[in-house]
Image (cartoon, rainbow, N blue to C red; front, side):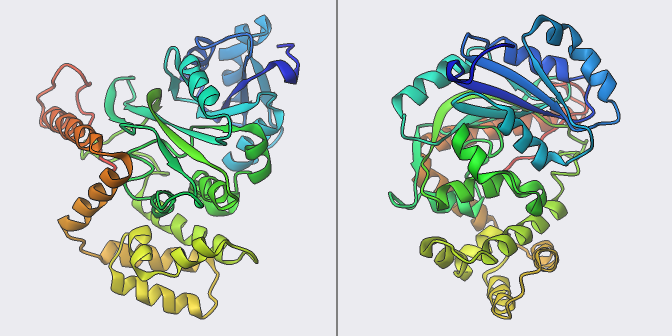
Length: 368
């Protein structure tokens, strides 16, 4: 692909690892959005099946429609994402997993939003959760466009709480960000699977604007077990809770943090939401932090143990969605009701009553 950096508007970037059976489907969805100012790049992170991955894409590489980067050694997903950003030539970059799919016409629709808000650094987009067979399971999307900016309103606190927002609004990883922002902030391997969340925190903390748009533009593939849980290591409760400890350690170890952010993480009420446990547990966490404990793994152990022992009431879930309505508007109620219908349909599938829309034995775990 011989395009100069000045002629590229959108860089579509795929961080690849060991999925030769799905990577072609992903790349075809990106090439289906091709335009003179769009480039597509795949970076394989020295996966055991690297030859098969490249082989699946060989005809596209030969035709010049795809750039392929082969990492010489495994550098981990955060650094692989950074390598893709470094190689990008577009004004905007969009990262996807190697089993996800971009919707037809996604770039054309996104182009209208970037033209409407040229001063916005990051755009969050809606997404369908699909199963292993590519069938839609759930849909998550903001019902209206929403601005998140620390100096503008309190919406940004919902991003930091990592509660109903962002997952009910947009996926934190597959966002459209200005390349200069992604190249400066970087994805941080120190926080494990939370590098996408920390990327958004850092962008907001540094004064950038995030706008979520009411458009479903990509499909996020997940495997489900018969109990309705995500059957992935990265989605396990233990790893997610421990990642919160890593984020706390990272943020609190920095010499300079905005007062608004420092005050937020010094609140027991906020920490009880962020860590998904009781406010009494949050008070204990604050006492632990007062001892200057900045060991992310120790904090993660504490958060995981307390969160697993907490018996949070249904009112916490209700409060979560009331806050989502406050930020995203009453249209969130419609989205939640659609989710409940989808959940019921999947429950019927688990009980051996397939509905015809999803393969037998697949079910979904809600974010809410």
